[in-house]
Image (cartoon, rainbow over all chains, first blue to last red; front, top):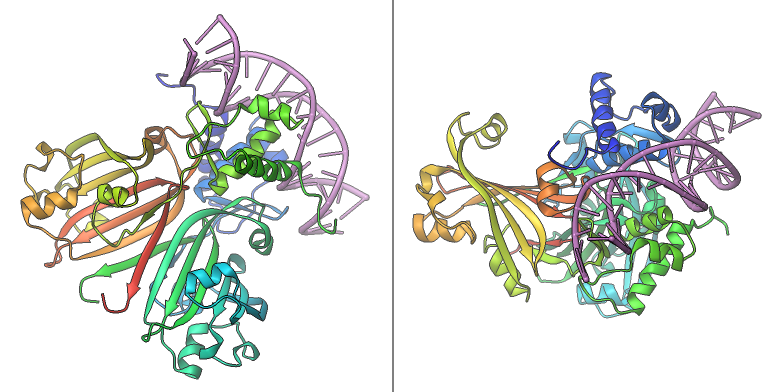
Length: 240
Length: 240
DNA sequence: GAGTGGTCTAGACCACGTG
DNA sequence: ACGTGGTCTAGACCACTCA
């Protein structure tokens, strides 16, 4: 070979990939145990885990808690510039959505929120923390920070559905423009625990800051996605 | 403790984080060797590497080839919906850009390109492969597939600068609308090698498909970024 | 040529999930 | 209760980088 030797764990990655294809393992199906795999491929657990981590990074398989390795489902297509809501997104693509509200509370705007929104520090804001599933796999957790001036009594509503729908129907508020930020990060602390993944698992962060037509702050949305769960798809320009 | 014991490598992650902050290690500065770190923190290289990998996933440090671990520079802000070009982006933020053309060729549209663009399979297209640096760190590689009908002779031009600028100035073509796709993936093969990172390093994929006002295919752009290199920032809606 | 990071072995113990 | 994945040790060899 002209280059450095192709290391064992990369060979294993390829063989495992082929094996998964050949066996036609379907979405969410469990792989054999690490010990069994390391025997079958005549290597140690450490090396098998390195190969499995590669496939995890590529998004072919994922792990859940201490339960084992599973085949990753197809990515969800997602357009953060639209506001049709998670539930409609998922059902339109033929999957089963579910949302769980982990907590909701009235709190005071901390410094970072004040800096991001222009709201004075200490102003009351609603804070909702939710977990969202597709086909019973938790794909993201989401923090919503909402200006209570525009939706008094929001906390006594059910927050398991679209907040935007509620905004429109109950409070007659529509977002006019958004500032969106997206970048890869590692899932840690509360976010990792809530999704049942290891500390440091690769994730994607999506933040949306929404204002209405008068330029007033409506909502700040911070989403923490599993890295293999979505494919962002946006159309810009032209007449649309 | 109420939860599982806080594992050593997470403690090390935190201590290393603090240490880097305390020492005020600056952007691109090198960390001590793994063996030295494992001695200093009384543990093995394997565990230190686990801690370093955590910090890598979080984007605080990165590795280069076999040269060691370095402190990650600030993320580049990037708006894929605009077309002001890499060079202007970078200089506007006070950094030094550089672009290297790794190859350029006239080829025939393969199946996947034909499916993505609507171009008939086998149609001639320009294919340019470039590497882009910020402050001499390679942050991304990029494949451009360009419809040669709109820019004959492009390959004999220098392609180390903005393709868009050339489109406008030389060929009087302006992109009208784009379809953008973004998702995290693992850098492999050519892309990993060209960026001098290990196989399977976390990356971010950005694809832009551009058409002109008549709906004709102009260009397909596939970018492979280091995961810690950028922060996507888009403004949508409002009057703009 | 010395030292580095990249890879790999052959074990071990533990907390947790599942039956 | 068993087997799992998660963590950790104490080594080793190699290819590569850098002085």
